[in-house]
Amino acid sequence: MGEDRFNLPPGFRFHPTDEELVVHFLYSKVALLPCHPDIIPDVDLYRYDPWELNGKALSGDNQLYFFSHITQERISPNGYWKHLGVDDPITSASQTVGFKKFLVFYIGEAPVGIKTNWVMHEYHLLDGATTSRSSRRRGKPRIASNEWVLCRVHESNCGDDGIELSCLDEVFLSMDDLDEISLPN
Amino acid sequence: MEDMSLSVNGQSRVPPGFRFHPTEEELLHYYLRKKVAYEKIDLDVIRDVDLNKLEPWDIQEKCKIGSTPQNDWYFFSHKDKKYPTGTRTNRATAAGFWKATGRDKVIYTSFKRIGMRKTLVFYKGRAPHGQKSDWIMHEYRLDDHTDNSPQSNASSSVGESTQEEGWVVCRVFKKKNYHKTMDSPKNSSITSDGHTQMFHSTSDGALDQILQYMGRMCKQETEPNNNRNCYNNNFNTNTNYSNISRCLLRPIETNMGNGVYERSMQLPPLDSPTVQTLSGSSQSCYTPGDVPAMATGTEASVTDQSGGGHLNPVYPVEQGISDWATLDRLLASQFNGHGETSRQLASCFNDPNLNFCSTQDQDLPLLPYLRSRSFNPNQDYNSDNDLWNFGRSSSL
Image (cartoon, rainbow over all chains, first blue to last red; front, side):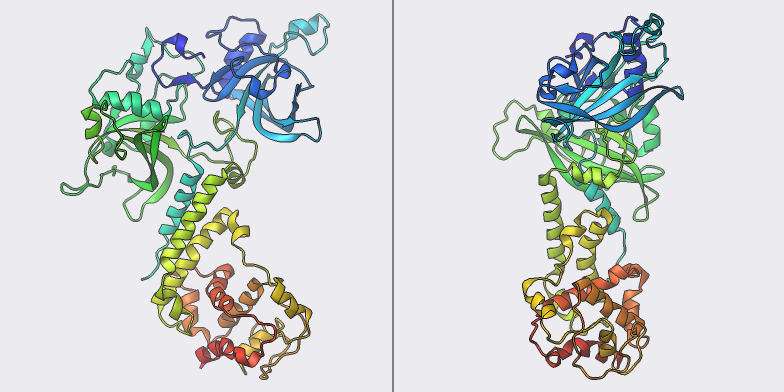
């Protein structure tokens, strides 16, 4: 999904940087600006378990991308997303433009669910970054219908997909160091 | 500039958010196959590069695609042989060289072998004194040689490239600092500690492989004659010693580096069934303070504070020794602390080349000796004399 319509040669995939996600995609969405390419769909995340998202979200390189409404209750039919308490700032031209939250999916009911490998990065625009000024002026509550987050979901594993060094590679690399210890013979 | 083919009228043809991020299969099956068959490739996304003339830090400029930030870079390279008669490839540049690491990995597409991947690290300087860098290269070559597989449709050009000479497609990237994975769309992880992340996410299979590999390595080097005489009071020759140190140190040092295996490699504590009887009973047992005295005979010991002058080999029980490491350390400290004794030993232990300066390392050489002794709780100490003779004889 996504790659084909641009007539790109094999190997090109949707693989955005954090900055692109926030500045290009999320900003356009929130500011109601036209977005090219307009490829990221809206999904009500909390209606689905993560394994149901395939086909509903934009997939690129084993990651699933979609817009969702901001909510505090991240509960799905069979589990919940737990915020890990860490937010990373997203910068563009050395200015903070947004942040991302890290979440992990647990099966069952909070707080005793079973942790899974499903990980979500939830991208937020920074408050006041043109976001929902219009809605605030009209006196609407903070959680307005036009407040969106961009979600990126994937199932994490140390897959040896050749993109990064495999775990085994790392071990071999560290063993190379040992080779360099010269032993008198 | 050079990325003209990817842009039309100055506008990149690659829409925002898209990157060249090919799978291994795409690299081999699509790009490299076309390359070796002299077929035209739609967009000139992968350039030809003379690896010997290009430093890794120049690759990003030379091989950039469009104007979007990249984490990895791709190019075709034609492998040359290092020597006209040999089969080795020359991968040296002006500033350093690429050194292969690990084993080549077979690349499959739907269970069919299509090629191989070699992992290389860039070292600055000249072998063997190069300085390792963070630049990593995956070098892919076509190789569909499988046993008796009927692949008649594979073109002859594919076959040619299986030799050491020929076109390869390479991907160069900088090794991730695992403390900073935020910008990596692939591997963004929550843990901040590199090792934890790496090993927690390791599948059991990979771990098994590692352990197997280590076991094999260790076995190869301990066999067979190194082991025997090196513990038989024969600490005089450096050759013997270095053999031991090699068989002992290599896997264990790796473990210390990674932290994870320490648990699995630790020696069993002495509270195994037989030994429990030892500490539980009122049988003879050494106390930490006594051991040095016992071993050194008459001379005062550095670590000895309680029983300096004991010559009597039988000692009253006071407490058990909690684990092998403690015992080990005692002996090690004994040998080292004892000036005259350790003239020879010190040359082994403290030889900087052997990396034996830390206490942990000093513990190692004695372990097999101790472990090989049966710690029969009923055994009289006199029968264990050779253990201490070892210390004495070397002091004489």
